[in-house]
Image (cartoon, rainbow, N blue to C red):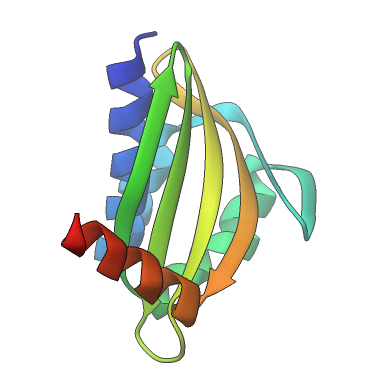
Length: 125
């Protein structure tokens, strides 16, 4: 697995949420996929889809601010703009295996204010 592959998988996962394409997301996930967050501890694929997929209806867009990949892992920092409410930033660690996403761990981040500051910084540099 190359860095390009895991990067492509991560970008495709965000695109599936933006376009509300559950089939596209499911095609990216390994059968033994696990997801962790401050609210979820290594939940399986079915539980992830049940708990997390409904959030896609609230997503307007994702803006990837940073993506660092090495081997079969990638860290992504993004800003999410929901259809309503404040934007927020998270960081996620993606791990791929056999051309599929095997694991995602999300680290919750800052609210709209912090995301807006970073966007302004990147536009200025």
